[in-house]
Length: 390
Image (cartoon, rainbow, N blue to C red; front, top):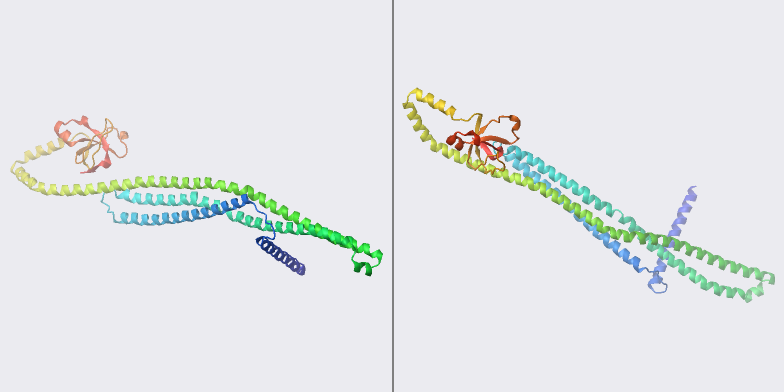
C-alpha cells in the first residue's frame, strides 16, 4: 500500500511538472508570435475592475480600522479628563453629583460609539472583502486553463496537418519495407502505422475537448460573478458611509447634550462663587449696623423685645419653609409660574396638596411682593435648579 501511495504521488507530481512545462512552452511561443493566444477584451476589463475594486476596498478597510483606533484613543483621553474633573471637584461645589454622573455617561457614550462602528462598519467591510481571495484564485486558475486550452488546440491542429502527410506516406510502402518484408506482411505494417496515427489524433482530440470544457466552465462562472461584484460595490459603500454618518450624528448629538450640561454646571459654579463673594462683603458691611441696632435694642425695655419677636413671626406667609435666591433669570411660560430675575429672594411655601408638586419645582412668593402687600395670591411655581437656598 505504501509503495502504491508513493507511486500515485510521484505520478501526480510528474503530471503537474509536465503541465507547468507545457504552459511555459506555450507562453514562450505566444510571446514569440509563433502561436496565437485566446484573448477576451471584455473579460480583461472585468479583471481590471476587479483588481481596482479589491485595492479600493482594502484601503477603505485599512482607513476604517485606523479611524476606530483613533476613536479608542479619544475615548481613553476623554475618560482620563473626566476622571480628573471628578476627582478635583469638591463636594460642596454646585453640581457635584451631576459631574460624577456625567463622567459615567460620557464613558458609556464613547463605548457605544466604538462598538457600533466596529459592528456596523468595520465588520461589514471585512465580510465584503472576504469574498475576494476566492475569486482572485479562480481568475488565476482560469488563466492557467486558458493556456492549457491553447496548448491542446495547437497540438491538435499540428496533428491534423501531420495526419494528412502520414496518410500519404503510408499509402506508398517504403522501398526498404517492400524489400525486407514479404508481401503478406506489408499490409499489416501499413495498418499498424495508420492505427498509431489515429490513436495519437484521437487522444489529442479528447485532450482538447476536456481542456475546452474546463476553461469554458470557469470562464462562464466568472463572467457572471465579476460584473455583479463590480456593481455591488456601490451598495457596500453607501451602507458603510451611511452607517458611519448615522453613528457620528448620534454620538455628537448626545455628546453635545453632555457638553451643554457641563457648561451649565460650570456657569452655576461661577455664579455660586460670585454670590458667596457678595454675601461675604454684605456680611462685613452689616456687622456695624447690627452692632448699632443691638446697642439701641439693649437701651429699650425687655417688652419691645417680645413685640419684635412676635412681629417677626407674623411677617412670614402661611406655609413658609425657607428662603431661596435666584441664581439665573427665569422667564415664566405658564400662568401659574413665577418669573425670576437673578438675585430675587423668594419665600418657598408648602404645596396645599403635595401630589401637585412636580420633581424639581418649588412653590413660593417673592419676598419683595410679600413685604409690600402681604398678598399670597401672587405665588407661583419655579424651577429649583435656578435658585439656591439662602
